[in-house]
Amino acid sequence: MSKNSISVDVYLDENKIPEKIEWRAQDNIERAKAFMMAFWDGEDKTAMRIDLWTKDMMVDEMADFYYQVLLTMADTYERATHQTELVADMKQFAGTFYKKFREIQQKGNT
Image 1 (tube, one colour):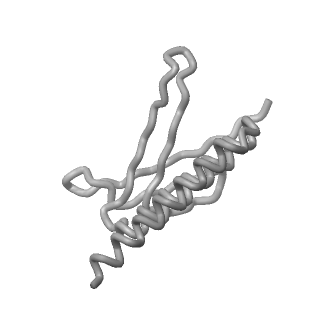
Image 2: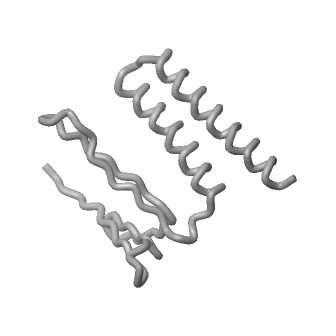
């Protein structure tokens, strides 16, 4: 059995608001404006999550991020379960979410 580690460093400003996020896997260091991490507790049957984003993350970036995460969650669910009908529903919701966000943005710019 081999072991790899992923570490996440969160730099906080004086008000403890994330200012910079870096993550590393082996020797590569990457920067990110946001991250979501979820763990499944099989004993309690609950999800444990950490969601963080930097103070310079824009609302449109957050919408893009959520849209892409929803799509990749659907893809992961499909690989794990082969429930194509549920996956199609998840992807349709993601598309509706993103479309509504864009409509709201357009209304704000007029």
